[in-house]
Image (cartoon, rainbow, N blue to C red; front, top):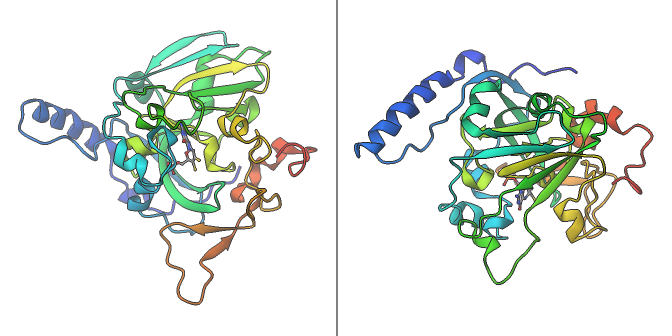
Length: 313
Ligand code: MTE
């Protein structure tokens, strides 16, 4: 696989050890009542940085953290940033079970200290025809799955979001927009692909609640809804697992959901997209062409021989 050189010179990347020590210090100071809460600190160290969005500008943090889809906190784009303040992502653990040699329940702190955290700048294309460029901090899902040692019979990976109606107003209201928990899935080879990331941060800081704290999936060649947030369970399974949007509207959202400008959504075109936070100027349409696999052509081999328009969309 060809990696583009980092867009940001590594000399400009803040050593995350500084954040780490700062957090420990700040936590003590907060406990002692000397400081307000420690916004902006992170619990991980970033070892490496890879820009995989070419020369496209990173989307402003303000947009990435206020224009969200996270139905557990409401269906409006600003609901997640407004109504996720009571969500408590710590302590946290993820259970890995099913067809594995080593079933495990791993705490977030252990994960953060044992995984090589790197920055990856990826395009994110939502199925609603908008997109962003986001600097994620995370580790390859393959590294975590290797710890669990999938059995030969494991063919798919199923993911589950936490259910906490007390902290997630979208799960407790009279109107329930989706069945809970939010679930997603990948084929095992998709999950093991080096581009598939478990993100724990953005812009070098802990993931904000609205972006899926404390840990979420990022699959940059698929529509954004595959990127399930606030994951609490990962199961290795034999058969294709259910996915929330496919259950909600099977004729609109397939299991694969690879970004594909040639397969329109039944209600809108997928040929172009609107880049959030970008001013394209008065004479421009403000839209850019959507690329097959969101521009991540290196995954094409995963789908050779499959009909990605009619059958395996
Ligand atoms: N995960 C859960 N648990 N609940 C959700 O509603 N929305 C999905 C995905 N993950 C969603 C979710 C959709 S539709 C998108 S486009 C992305 O999260 C949005 O991620 P962002 O808000 O960090 O940009």
